[in-house]
Image (cartoon, rainbow, N blue to C red; front, side, top):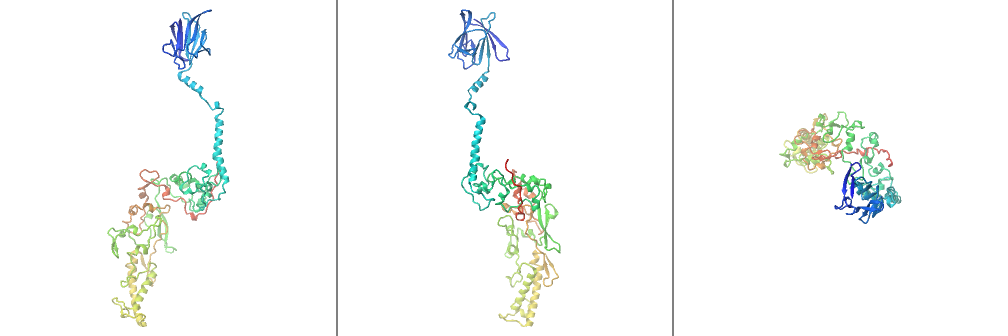
Length: 575
């Protein structure tokens, strides 16, 4: 049997013809077959085409070797006589019987309908089960899941919400929430901060209306004493302060320490270009490391002669000549008192340290005022009579000093028994208790007392005691004769716009920031400049510096007790 086999690899590929001279054409997957078809669904020997002498003449007959048979024109057949135009299916291959040509008994056209990977994909798709096959669609299932989610997360919390007793209009510090676990926890967008942990079981204290943002009134129920970021109510009612709400900066449910913003951008977004801000916002500040102005200091200056107070407060920025000195009314050389060899004291040489005079407050944020009684009297004793070392001068007004000295010498002159050289007999002689002098002798004793008092007062005011520390000037007032310059008050902090945490720097040496060891005048301003701070501190996130956000030194809520409570825009309902 002569066979003409035409093979078409793909739709656009050319036809390849091949002539075979066989007794029987064997078709299958096995390598011993005449026509090898690579489809795993075929048997090794799947079918044979054999010549056949029928009643109508010679013909070609199909004999299936596999139990599944072969589809001829779409119908499974085990044995069949082929005629031109018949199509035999062998898996993904089709074999078409053509009209005989001269010299050939059988003409066959072999074509691959699908590539191997396409056939595998089609087979997988045929066996895939979809939601539609089960009677459900994705839309129907989505609505079912949405309904279940809404029922659990909205219906149950709302039911518990309307069942609980009404909450107060504003939160109070005395409110103790129930510790019972409530359904509201399903709505919680994150853990509360440490400061609000006591409200963890009572969301209604802050969220007083469903689906409405937290109002300022809820915050001020507990934080009523907090002021605004403005020194006056007029400024606080202007843009941008009027539109600000508590939750613009303080966002809850951001972790244990997420309530207070630490990024400098929260401040520099306005202070980088402060020209548009009301009031006195200061100079532009973009960051601390490179674009922060020098510190503003509050210093004392002598007031005019006709002023009610001897001193006035002035502001001066570091780096200017005005910020290098202040009027104190004292003669106090730091370098003398901090001499490493020590200073002369009643008990001998004594080495002083900064902590000997500068005592920190209880919160270690500042220092107590330096006073004569607490810090100076150990070395600067106010005794004035060697014969009576326990008698001390009062530290205060010159009138009290003059009166104290005059009273002392008058008392001992009238009492007698004074062994001072040059003293008259009325003063030196001993007298019995209660014994009085005759008027003429008493006048002689008091005249001596006046002379001694004047000499002692001149020595106290012009040579030692008062003169060592204070500026003393003569006056026309005969009884007093001397005037002591007023001492500048220490009632206001040196920095006007920041708070310096001395307690956080307790491990640092005072001299590393304050150049006190080389200061020769009491008027020297010994406050560190911003360059000293930048040796250790930098912007938040710096790798080699102590991260220092704006809140490290600056306070946002200013002068809370001086400002009235301002109305803020009501929060809008969630869309």
